[in-house]
Image (cartoon, rainbow, N blue to C red; front, side, top):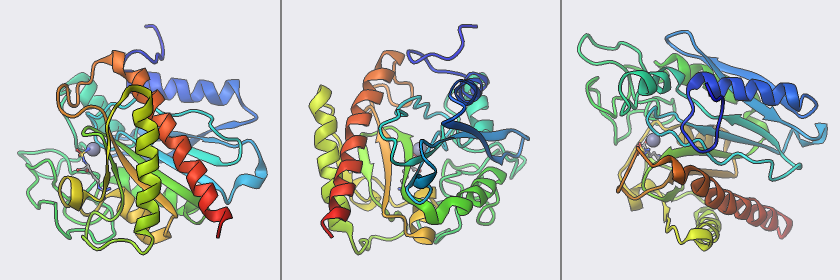
Length: 292
Ligand code: 0X9
Ligand code: ZN
């Protein structure tokens, strides 16, 4: 066992061990968090990174791998000491483990909703305009929304955790793959947010910064304008319930050549270009509030 690495896809145990090591090695800054739990009894681990007790109301939340097969393994850097960071690399650990051991293309949770088909789509299961389009009530589909909102222990427990810091968040970012998109809420309606234009312009600048490194092209917009309607996502829930100023969903590389099985050589380039866009988002956001 080589332990955690940035040039390959890590297992759940390796990622959790890495989070734990960070919290031991940088104990004055990094705290290990048990955010929630899953149907199969796993704990959903994250870290809180905080350089100053003054940052509490300037917090940023990052989630990835709510869809099991979308191993992103990317992105996280200490770009700023001026925010508190909540980072949850594996939002769906049951699915993630299953994707590594049994079926690489697994997407959903592992909750046995029907005899024939396992799991619900954890990004259709959140309780904000749940069942408002772009979902299915058939347990055998990839977009099964679950029998009721928050039927999945993982989404329900993470919603509880997010609620405990929800009012302190200035940003919430959800990482997915693939398609090279920077998505803006909402996914349940084609009506634009009040400040859509501002968020869109920030998004365009972020996409421009991202493209500058390797030429990777992103499109910016809502799911209605780019892919397909989708209600019950974590991003919609956070935006709708807490009105968090900055909410984006990334669909990382690529555009379908490799799709979910992106070659590991692309992990670091993906992380670096994403970080470029990320820094732009925060700088532009800081500009926009200081000019108000
Ligand atoms: O379908 C999804 O859940 C996401 N695409 S994926 O191919 N990774 O499955 C897009 C969800 C975006 N929804 C919102 N941001 N509302
Ligand atoms: Zn996804």
